[in-house]
Length: 242
Ligand SMILES: [Zn+2]
Image (cartoon, rainbow, N blue to C red):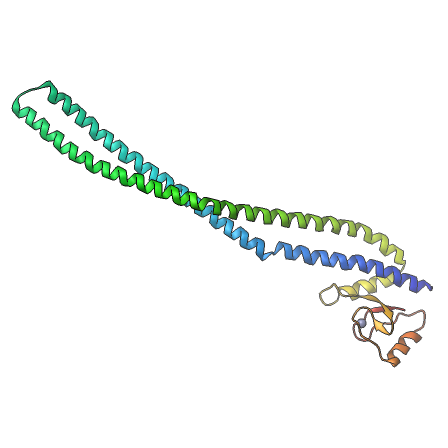
């Protein structure tokens, strides 16, 4: 095995790490931009808003019931007071006046009771609506939280693997033992957006990077390349390891 063959073989190990790193970055990006998580978070925001509205409606309905109850109590107190005055006796005219007032108040109490009843019915309807919707809203919240947790766990795993590989890379690069070759590799790899296969095995007249099967003439040219230079693929420019 020539020194250059050893260097190129070591470069294949560097590339294996670089390819995995490239894949990790792509996966992390797609996780971060996940439409699924975005959709769930959107639903969660809507659910929180809907829950707030249901709570506000519930409070409003309860307060309307309190107001109606207070009004009925208020009227009842007046009726009680008048009834007591009536029982204490007095001139016929006074008693008639009091009786008239009691009659008026009794009618008012009837109206107030109707209002109270309606308020209670409305509060019950609001509470039933809330009870029906709340589990769905909680589910939307839980689903979004779970999706975010899962995404974060996957991102953490990717980050950990990324750190491992990044730590391995310098050792693999120094095993190549040829700075110029590594530089050439890096520039080939980072060309056209990066992530390209820069070095590949050449087996059975086929480029391991792009899969091109060479004509007998091209294969012969590659085979005849002097040991000191590196043959490259005519299609993808990858450095070929014979
Ligand atoms: Zn090729």
